[in-house]
Length: 183
Image 1: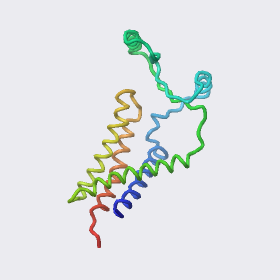
Image 2 (image 1 turned 60 degrees about the vertical axis):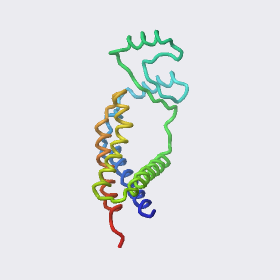
Image 3 (image 1 turned 90 degrees about the vertical axis):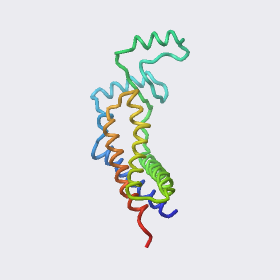
Image 4 (image 1 turned 180 degrees about the horizontal axis):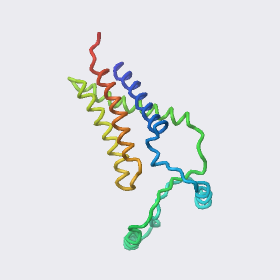
């Protein structure tokens, strides 16, 4: 149990540190958060159009549209521009809580991986390392890649680098920690 808890704490911190570097100083995800000098105008206009927080995909069909009309509208939209808008009426001021929640989620995520890995009767460094990389690939394929298939994200490769970096380093740590002999 001690091995799993310590493995999860250190592994969660490794992933948290990688995420900080990736989204902060390294700015790997810049392509998904580009600046436009028109931001004030756009935000002011959106404020006149949306009355509540929400996520919008445009163009879209109105709820209750018949199947025939829906097919007709989707056909007319093909090849034209589209946008996703995630709109919030105010910028939150809760960076500390978001970071604390992120760290906690990372620790739980690595704890779940450790829980699975310690069930392997004969663990090797390679098995633990590859299990960690495999977990990262599952995370990548399930979320960033699947969303990219449908909505074409601009930072797909940054997410892939994140998976290799954060889960690779975590795998190195867990490979050593979970396979070392008690002295």
